[in-house]
Length: 72
Image (tube, rainbow, N blue to C red; front, side):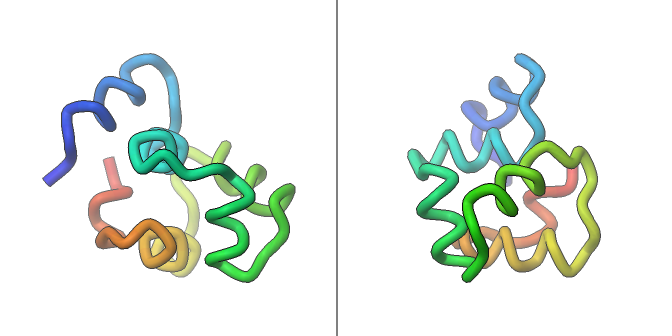
């Protein structure tokens, strides 16, 4: 299930990754730290509309959601 707030962010033009991050009130730095990468590296991933499956899975784990919830 995808919360309405996440869908609303995407309607406003955000990628699913950015919408979820904002919904969870996380900074790019916090997510990057959870993933073990730099903030600029995460920022780059956040702009990708459809990242690779392995990347989606790592980001989903950092968010505490399933990878399928990032596929819209």
